[in-house]
Length: 275
Image 1 (cartoon, rainbow, N blue to C red):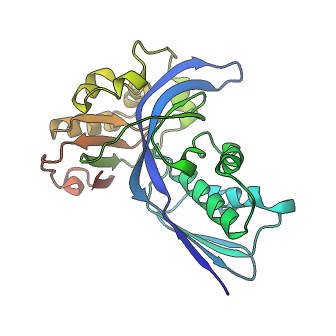
Image 2 (cartoon, rainbow, N blue to C red):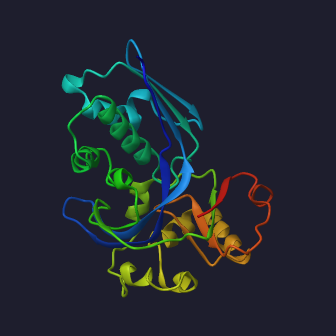
């Protein structure tokens, strides 16, 4: 009997992002907090006569064979022989946003297909395989708040809940190249660790928690900085760019009324939810 599997891979935001040093291999060590949010794609996997992959929803600028979903499934396949599955990815999480949408899709695909094929893999095994596809891919296996160090691939679980807060996302039609963003930053270790800052009230975060990408990215793309300032003026308690951008998120207290985001940011992707 054929089986249909449906998964809803979710996005994440970065609470703070410190670039602490440039490594000898050319990469950078960072400190950040990954926090899962309920903005999701839809991944559907069905038995079929041969492997196929279709992507719908928000268009992606990449070939099907380069999509992280296909690469994740291929990483499970013995001798590169892809399983006989029909895979459909409906994209809602914007790409090039710093929200980890592609990484989340990859993690969901690998977990679902491994389970469907009855592969004897533990969550740790899957995390190790996903790490070859991207530093933040393994985060989405356990999908809980973590303090991330190394290149963003070493995770320490943390106790943090933003339940009851309103979250707003605004993603302008701007692509920020991650390599370019790193090239413009001078690494430095922060005076106060993020693990200390996130234990403080959210109302104190704006003056304590920074994203080291913001100064250089805002200089090159001032529209992104203007979005952040607009969200603060609308009453956000905390707002920041996520990752290397270009999405900006904001936390609003639950009783704060929100305006028509589409009207304020007509050219941007906007989304809001209560956490």
